[in-house]
Length: 310
Image (cartoon, rainbow, N blue to C red; front, side):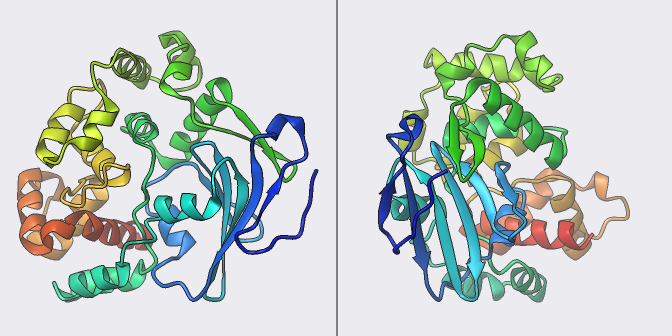
């Protein structure tokens, strides 16, 4: 395998024919604030990042393999990329957004949220590919994170493209056209269970442009976007809100509610004896009232705090 000495921001041609259109690159951000890899990758928003033995996290972003490691106050990005690594990381990790200011604003809401922000102070909401986020969160329904990650990995191995880097093999998430080659039975054999038909049917709706992903990015109204997402098989209210928050649609005015969010909102504010009887609309109304147009980010701090300390 090819090894090289890096210079910050410089790019090196990969010397194998297989990856002739890709380059090994490195990018360093010094004295970064509001960026903690563990908080970002383990707060439930993504499924294609894994922790390596050296403490770095390695993941696949579109057609790029990236390694992210924090050393002191610096963040070191490196990987196999088909585009400029600085541009990839700036967009994907939402680096142009002032999270310090967001945290200052939300910390004033109450001491509960302030404590959760201190616990997950390095969270950033990723700009994940819309198509991949849709399929990933359909798979996430009634599922646990290790199993979700395993299914997505199998899906990518079967229908995505191979990238070799640093002696290891990675697979891109399949495009709509690539995944359309899979039958319902093919998907079931990869462990999707009851979600196989949802993934199959959603893939075809998008392939046939019954739902146009590009036009979704042009839609300003969040509620109209949610209604569009809810027409996709396997997308219910919680999955729709996750897609709205964690994808390139980037809507902070949503508040995904799962068992952990219901629990933390009940424990902190609502205080019913049976948390399962807490009404979803009651939580949404409370979140809108307390957190305003930053409710989606508030949800992530609360979710990570409650689940990680459980």
